[in-house]
Amino acid sequence: MRKNIAILSILATSLMSFAAMAQTEAAAPPEGAPPVDNAPAATPAAAPEAAPAPVAAPAAAPAGYPDEYALRPLTLSAMTFQGSLPVVINLSKSAVAKPVWIPLDLRFGVTNELEVFVNHGIPGGSLIEGQGLCLGGTSRGCEKAYNNVNLGGVYSFLKNSGVELGGLIALDFRRISDPMNFAVDVGVAFKYVAAPVSVKLVPQIGIGINKRSAGNKEELAVPLQIAVQAAAPIAVFLDTGIFGATTDFGKNYYVPVGIGASYLAMHGLDVGLEFMFPRLVEGDNIKALFGNAADSREIMLFASWRSQ
Image (cartoon, rainbow, N blue to C red; front, top):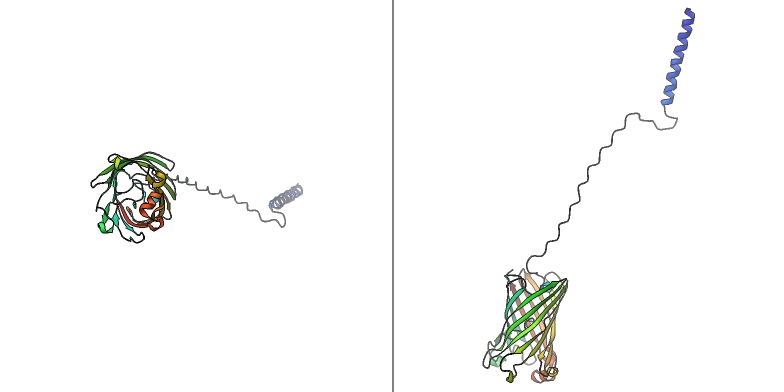
């Protein structure tokens, strides 16, 4: 009995040892395999939630009147005053500085669409046209020190995709001294802006009101300016067009050509200059009065200040 118990004990011990050995061999990795880490895998950290992308704010519309010369609208912004002081010097052959004149130009924006003005040239044309204050007396080509003025306004009624249209009317005192001649100028104003280039065209007709039998009749003016904003403060421009009395227009027309530049010295203040052939192409009657077109030359220096 004791012998049987001993044998059973030996067998049980052997079986338990064999089972333990088999379990160990099963858990061990195959020869050459990397050891297995039985530790529980760490839970990966959750990725931080991405912040929502910032929403781009809409671009703010430019406030006030543009500083860029070529990109300005036809009319000043509301409650803005502008004064332009040009000094024009005659450089014609045998008549240098005979005369010198100042065609002052004053403008005020009543609203963003309505501008009123007092000037001394062709409404909507180059500042170099006209006379205003003439310096030097009769010996230097001035009939009177001050003998013409325009009072008028421009109303902008359409602005769309770079195109602007307006209407123009002015009371034109062609001559103040006796015999006084005056007319009413009516026309349209057009401007197209596709930065950095702009085109401005102001066709108009001046209708003589008095002294018509003495020649104070209709005159056509079609001033054209093409401007390029070469840099933020600098613009260059070409002034031209066609002008003349409607009576026998083919002999009384003239075409000026001027090249100029405007520099923004500071916000609201422009300075610049323009060189012009006032009658580079002309009809026979104009040539008879003024001589060879290439001999007529003018230069203008100007400063222009705006209140806003």
